[in-house]
Image 1 (cartoon, helix red, strand yellow):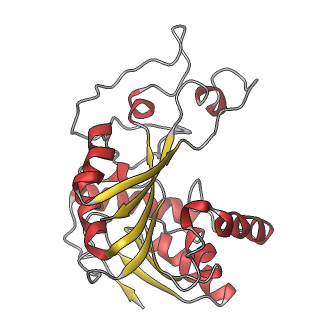
Image 2: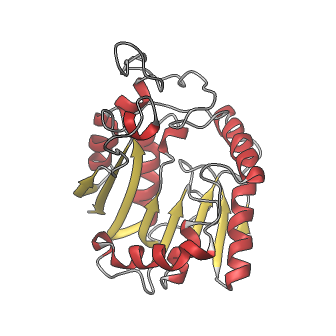
Length: 259
């Protein structure tokens, strides 16, 4: 079952939808469906993830902001009843095709992650959100929506871009990796081209730690665990993504539970 975004979405929504539609059509960056050679290994990793506490089979699971034919197929194959919300119709088309190929049942909803009005309250046991909060101005609005649709005691596993990583230039300078953007800003970050850390053509926003963690707690969640996915590589060539990650971890992952 598919539902569609109201065409009156905000300017931010419209630009990010166009940008991700373009990525999906080219299957670039984070719009590459899971491949057969990856599937079994990734499925084992998901099933063994201690954060899910062995609760995936039969769970009502929301993949939030995660179109592209990757997470949805893996969680459905792990036994979850999966709903996917994404702003891009083309990204959702990749989920639809992967589900068809693998004979998986998915519910697809086209919407912005900060407006889940198409979903009923208390509809999910688990919400999984890969990096996507950077594409909305107000991360707390996302948290409020998640708090509404997840059951009491439900899990919310989310990943975000670190604020300092978004403040810092991508390229190595003589002074190292330099902070060039103010921490306290509410407008979109400057556009980028050919960045390994940001998505060209999107509007992205820097969210402070007070908003990322404090906002999560104030929305009714208790933080149970916190990790920084490792992307640094010892001996990586200077100026590369893996070299920069030695100094500025790009992402954080948060496990929270609805009170």
